[in-house]
Image (cartoon, rainbow, N blue to C red; front, side, top):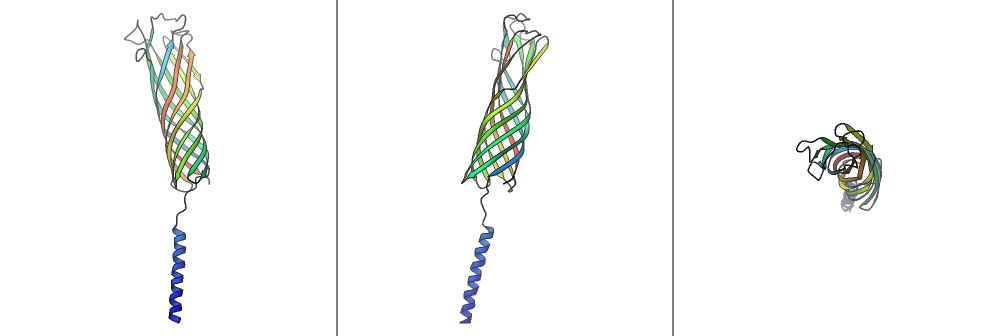
Length: 240
C-alpha cells in the first residue's frame, strides 16, 4: 500500500513539474502596441522631367531651347537620405495599425545640359535640381507574425527643392512643395525593445517652377518634376 502511494505521489510530482516547465518555456507572441523612436538611412534615385518655356523675349536669341535628351528634358538624380522617425502602433490580433512621422537630411541632386538649334552640339548652359531635406506623416497598416511585421505605409510628404539655371550667368530659386509618399516594408523585433526594418517608398512632391531673371535666359520659365524612389534601413526603440 505504501509502495503504491509513493508511486502515485511520484507520478503526480512529475506531471506537475512537467506542466510548470511547459509554462516556463512556452513563448508568448510579441506585442507591437506602443510608442517608438528610431533612426533611418538609405539611397534615393529619380528620373524627373524638366522643361523650359523661353518666354516672350529671352536675352539669348534662340530658335528653340533643347534639353538633353533632345526635346524631352530629364534629370537623373540620386543621393543619400537619412534622419529620424517616431510613431505609435496599436495591435489587434495579427493586425497592426500605426501613425509615423519622419524628418530627413537629403543629398539628392542631378543636372542636364541646355542646347539650342543654333549652338548644338555644344551646350550653352545647364539646369540643376537638388532636394535638401524631406519629411512625411504617414499611416501604417501591417500584418504581424509574432516578431515579424509586414506593413504598407502612405501619407503626406514635404521637402525643400533647389532649382538652378546656368546660361551666361546663374540664377536659382528654392521652393518647399507638398506631395505624397507610399510604400511598404518588413520590420523584425530582435528584442522586446529593439527592432530593425527595411523599407521602400515612392515619393511625389509635385512640380515646381521659377522664372529666370538677370541671365542669358531672362524671362524663361523652368518647370521641374520632383519624384523619386528610396530604399531605407532603420532601427527603432520601443517603449511598450
